[in-house]
Image (cartoon, rainbow, N blue to C red; front, side, top):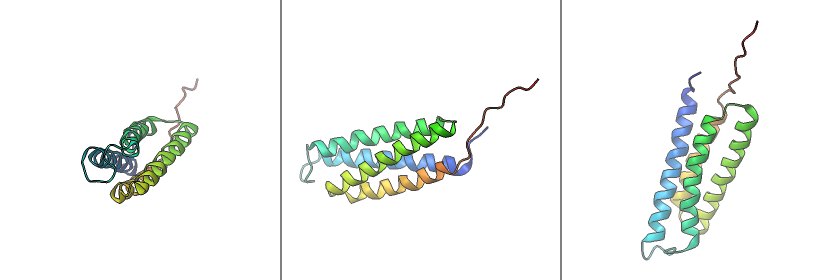
Amino acid sequence: MPHSQPSRLGTLLLLLAAAIGFALALYAWLTPLTGVTGTIGALGVAIASVVLAVLTLILRASSGRGARIFWGIVTLFVLVGIGFAALLLHQGVITAAMLLGLIGLILIGRRPARHPQHARA
């Protein structure tokens, strides 16, 4: 069964949030005078953004209701964690990107669960 339009938009928003988070955290980690140059926090946000992208793909591929709920909760925790860490690093744009990702997660969560069609004799 093909994915619905809100699910595709939600996946796109989550992947966009992960890409923005990764790029800006890596920029803050590498660029002098950002205030967080070379800190473990900025590197942690960059790594967590990659994890967010992987979780997005896992969430998109999951078909069972229980799996979707589990991966959705894990993704929510990662989104909140990245957003909070970005606030502590004074990187408000990353936090705003995670809010965009939260909208994407909500859109993915609205997709109905797919049930396998069993052959009947």
